[in-house]
Image (cartoon, rainbow, N blue to C red):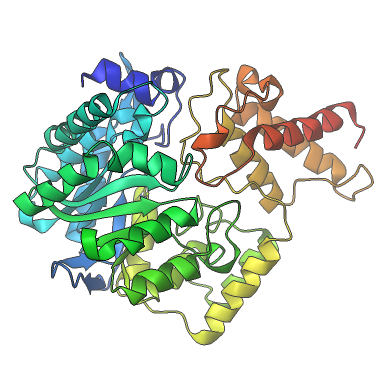
Length: 453
């Protein structure tokens, strides 16, 4: 697969528009340095000693260049060097991350370190080949090409942790069969594990719980080495859409002694910056620690969790997370109760459960879906959503929302341009009715503009 075809599949128009899960700013360094020793967990399947903090390579920083925006490789090198120096040894990437550039950037940075000093995780992201009218043989061939490209991009001859990516999305079991079972892709990956080119084989799950249950029902046959799930203190008992509560997912994996890799511990960043009154509740208990640390400590408190992924774009994010995990202090029963209460209070505020994963992008009409949702959620958390013009701070909230909206989202990419085609809906792991949410936000904006709230 050449790079032109790859970017066409995964969203070249997003790259041209400056979209993507990665930041367009270079790395910053303002945080305080960690002083403790990293917490590690032992993988019982392979005896790997894995850092409890894993590096999610989905949000590498970008910089402007003559050929457009490119990954800031120097910053990636600095971040990975610092992470490894402070005990992080698990690095998670995938073919579509960072507009198709994450594997290559990650591989360049990691190649500068001894291969035995880190674990690489990447994925079979062949969901990109759905709905193209491919025969099973053609689907297999494209998947095989993607698999081999990952080795080239990561500059390695083996993958430590390889995943079937985002199973449970699409049409559930039907999509699972089309991607992995009916075309021989899973059979091929199982043979690659036998040959040692894949050291641990697992899957990442979103969506239809029937698919999750089905995959575990065949555990004796497939012998999953690990499974990646969305887990945080909100999704533990209050998952939204068709996503399933993490307490069930975790318990089913624990029964089978399958190590758990956690994604979305911050729920797309929402648990790093709560509404002010919720922030204060947590700060009162631990004034010297970040709000984000509570979410990381929650998931790290469960013993079957092998590693917790965090997409750390800036050095201060990395340093703060290193402090949390070096070493990890598990949550007490009282703290777990406080986080459950916090989750219940969060549910009273109608934020959009967007994690900014970018799977909905590119929009065929150029709409910046994650940017719109991010601005709306930010204003909601900061108390800048007015219920009516009679609110005490209506003028301030109106000005802050509208001014910030125009700064955050380009005019031609705002919510009023959504025609409701629905092409984005099936790609959303959070099962958000994206057109409905965009129309709701646009309706609110028009009321603000016309002062008819």
